[in-house]
Image (cartoon, rainbow, N blue to C red; front, side, top):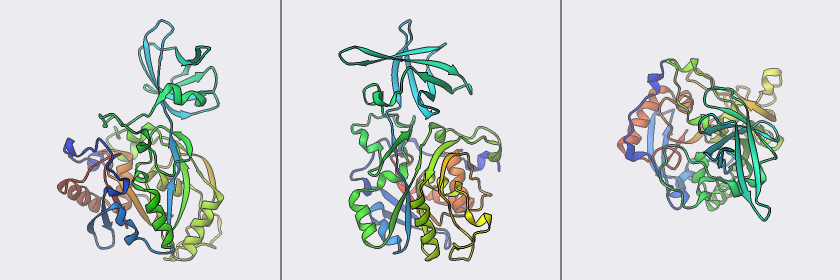
Length: 353
């Protein structure tokens, strides 16, 4: 598929620069794939489209203060943006500055503590492997700040608004934005109606915003991200399928985890069946995923999807095209633009049924 098929024109004023208050007051475009129809609602109306026995699966990753400001030994300023932890001391990172080999960070304190980072490898033109003199995580609250996507130009007054209310596992350079719409009260309403909520973890890297630069979608080399699906979540998914409930992914990151997990049915275990009679069993998983979902993909686990509106020519938009069908996706995005929905991280949401 040519990458131009993932293109669209977005008026700049529709790129949301700040979140709405309260979180669940954002708009919700409900998209029915079976009838190819749309309903305009708000996110607090989400329970109306859920059924007892459904399972929401959300990503409980937490955004770290990944943007660090330091200086060279010669004094020049350097910005380091942490992308992915490789081991206790080494991170994959973006490094701003020319000919940077070492960065010094001032952690302050009575002893005027400093931490040093050395560039030890350059796996690609833009990405560096940086090794710190000691684990950097304990100092992120002092040295770092929340990294917002490049299309958000306004300062975020409350960094907690770039975290989901259920964020638990630190490690992301960007938020799983579909989850930003949930409030504790909305979660209580959903659970009270007999809908369960389970969690997976996927640490989001900034490559999630990187456009597809090749001429064809399939030629793009997808980024890898660390993810985990624990036994309790696998059990909840399997039970939901056996009882005829729907597995609803909260965001493309959760969907990527669910579709990355090995299916027991592929090894001959057909104990779990979808309502249509197709095997759909997940197993616990922990590790890196490089799953690339393009419009030819056959979905195995996810029945419905909650998501924000995504950048043109992005791998996330390719995933949405795979889930909705390309024609319905184009129609939906054109409608959202006409109706002045807010786009991207702090924007409005879709529920794709």
